[in-house]
Image (tube, rainbow, N blue to C red):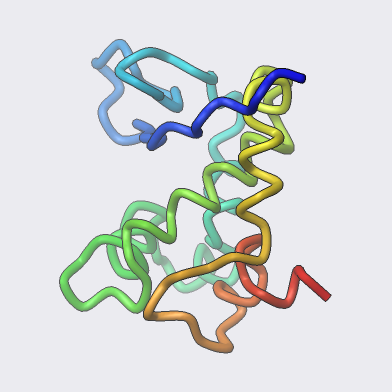
Length: 130
């Protein structure tokens, strides 16, 4: 039986249109997946229609929740969200990393885990074990 590949750190670019990696999820400095629908991708990261209604931009949400010094989550919390998006939208991801992804479900090790919707709806939240 083939052992699962170790999942890489994924990154994405939806902010800089003139770069070659625009609308792409990258892994190991190579395009892994092309994002066809920005809205679906941002929703996978926790962005909601309510945030749009109050005028919050998706990148502002990500900065506020995951990357600023005062963020309620960590940049590490982005990885499971990106992985979940890839699991739902990329056959290549399912072929290459389903074993590693499955091992991570329910195994959050964040020191910022809480009862927020963003946390509870994350596939790595321990509630997924029950």
